[in-house]
Amino acid sequence: MDNILEQIDLYKEKVLQYHYEVSSIIEHNLTKGLLREQYIKDLIEKDMPNTKTYSGIIVYNNKQSPQTDLITLNDNCNLNNINIFDINNVKNIFEIKSKMQTKHIKTINNTLKELKFTNPNIKGGIICYKLDCNESNLLKKFGFTFDKDIKSYINNEKDFYEFSSIDYIISFDSDNEFILSRDISNRFVLDKKKPIISKFLMIFK
Image (tube, rainbow, N blue to C red; front, side):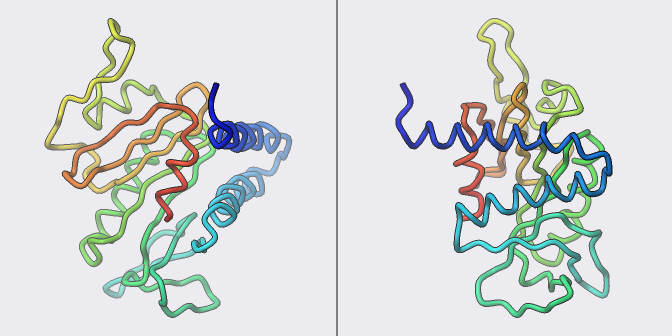
């Protein structure tokens, strides 16, 4: 049997997934999306009390990013009250999607590519409640193929990835749950061991 901490993590994960289902009763899509975004941000702030989350735009080289769902900042940086952030103050950026499609990954990858030209220390990616694409096809783009004999994914040790600027993909889909993260050697690591929520939260330590 799992230890008590793993049981608590599993509880948190199940509640997050249930929140997605319950919020489906809301017909107004924008409101529904905002509630789902806020739930994840509240979870991060509650479990990682030294982390504050924001949403807004990032300014760099006389340009500005698209509206970003989740932003965390470096310590001791200047804030304003209008949710516009200097790129040099930004630590992480994430998009939060109810149903993630490949086009959403392409969008955040392109945003990160631009931002990293100015601040290469920025990390980011995408968080989703559900996958709206084929898991095997998606993971293949990051160097993983599914082996039917061992019923597991194998890392092909690719040196080039279609999405070269993204650092994380987190799926809380109960049928396709995983964390995909870039390691210090610039290769991707896949973790499908449930629950994933504590490993997700450690991104924001």
